[in-house]
Image 1 (cartoon, rainbow, N blue to C red):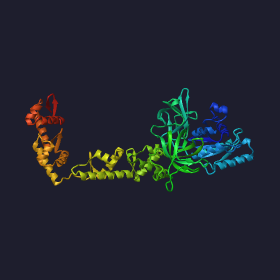
Image 2: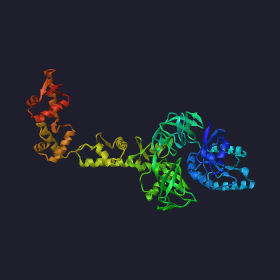
Image 3: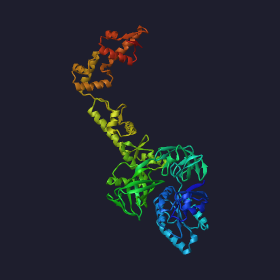
Length: 638
């Protein structure tokens, strides 16, 4: 298979980046009229060439200091850098800034091209070579090949192609699993097609007719067509430069800086935690400083809050010194699409020069203090490893739970890595999976202990109760913020271990209602009063008085009799179950009078010697029990 590798140019203005790309590919990357007129690259240019088993896509970036933000929009998705240094001028300011940006973004490799060699002698070329080697010393490009070339004469182009092919072979392949992620670097309209966006697909796969969303903003779009280097494709994998014909959006609806992905796959944030690396030649970065934040193809203003030191004793930082690193929370003035592991660049607000960069640790942190010892410990965990960072995120969610989908959108894991993480951590007893949520194991076990303690206290306080009502237990022990799945999981686990039982009411396993001798006597006496009263029972206070039972005891015992179905409540009246059972049998027996057997209120009152106070509730109860059915002013016996 032909592998696509994206190569970004870097270097000072007028060092021959565009001319070199043109010489390598046969395509002039300068597409704008202003670029042709002024002879400099203003915005991103694109070209490609086939070298061996690789399709090299070149992103040509502007070298002028005023257009560095355009350069940043092009280097976010590159696999390697072609660092261009003119032999007649050697290393210049934008050479250093461009290289610093590539270094901060941790571009995995590159090739150094010494251009315009036709204009210099051997000694000058040697000096330029030494300057280039000194520039990249100690970086990922320390051992990169340095190839002298001339775009004008063609000298060294074959050697450069060989070096680029070796670079392409060494570049790790982009992951095509999971949701697509396409930072948009251009938006335009084509006659007959409509809106087209371009970018480097950094992850996942794009397909025709795929439903996507543009973030930030959330505008839904549909892939109507795909092109890779001008050729139509049904799909495109990660690492490809793609042009996407989108439906559902006009040119004005989309812009550079947005990202296309599947709905729900990526999160939008205005606050994130990160490690920040300050360049050695930058000014000290003060706590609260306003900066220009560059990520992917986006540029957003923000402020940096320096966290407490993440090593040794916690200490509040007032500024970050040049060449140093620190943990920080960055608050953005506009939303950005981030996930853990993303790299970014920061530039000073004024003057707009590159001062550093960093890596996202948590794109959606909770609103916790960061300038405290606890904040320092949290940053240490976030920066330790993916496992430790995700465990910290899960623990912070507490009883609300951490959504499994956030393992990819927030924690930056691939779908396969997310599945492996959950399986491994569940097996190790570190986390608990309930529904589509993850909980820290100590949170779950602690709630199980609290629920058991609450049931123990309830049985002690209410020995006549069969158990704590399920919803009352949920609110009392778990609170309103707890995910329903967590309560169900804890109850199911305690039931499985035979610690508790019950459906509508939860009780400790083996719990039985226990009556004191006085309560047992009260139960028998109260039941006897209602049994003797038949279909004309007294209210509870009167029944308690007749049974010579104290009112509080009568209240508790009556509830027990109701739960045991010895008493039955009909409207506001209490009847003995035996009396109602006899009533049903007697009314049903009247059916022998024929299919037209009827019963009205007057006949019922006369037959049972009860007042209307009892007759109406009892007849309505017979209707509910399907013994009778009301028809007009009388009832038909069913």
